[in-house]
Image (tube, rainbow, N blue to C red):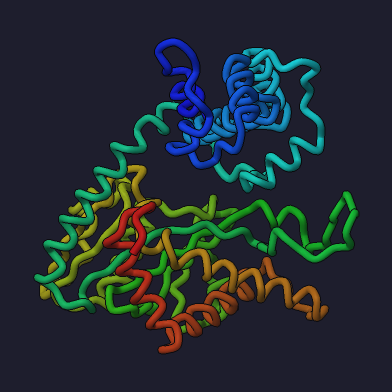
Length: 376
């Protein structure tokens, strides 16, 4: 429209004939239309065009805020709209609920729960972290040919609550308070740790380390005698339910080295205890060698295979079991140490099935060799 009006007014003494303008701009249907275009141009656009400008401006501000990982509310969208409307001098402008709803539908904007808070410093470092992750992936790809797929491993820790259930449930539409029962509320906040090991060919190593939470930090002889004996679970304990230096030593001595080949490559996170080679070498058999590669700090979300794939379905599986125990009204105390061992033993057994091998292998490679945000 701007181009058509400019061309129409380009005559030396007077405006060009509208039929001449139509030869270059087919949408021009009459001279009257050219006058209307000229009026809109002189007034910085007609009303509908100004509304579209407002919408584009709000959309741009929203995209910029999301790119900066800022919290945005409906009132912010309204403020940006009113700000632009004042610049365009739109009379009697107001952001109605209908306009706001249509704008959000048109741009696929919805309200979501914030999963994680990060500092501005971490956000500014995001590009640097991706570069570090890419460099690490490149170094791993260079080393993998030196080993068999069955000799390349990844291990990581993950916390579990003593009683853990799904965070979502079916409910009647319109209900404001959704409350659901658990066996013991305190057990939903106290945690313990598991540490699985997965190989590049999709095998889940057995046994898997489970560090239980015990007030004394150790299991008495009486408790050991009554403990459920699962061949695919190795049990340790601590006061907090978290792993320490001695637990890592036990992990290598009783879990990793008995199941690993003579030469192996292990990918681990940046936990400082992994840097203590004396601790690891003290339990390493003489006939075995171990090459450890540490994933750069804060990049596990980009290139840690267990973080990228394994733990999510594992925890979904765990929650489905505990939810079923409640809905079937089974007399099973989920938070008890023996029941915890039994559930993990069952899940470990299921995830070791050939049915899951293809998935494990596929996602191991996808998440090891592709950085987050790059599609296969």
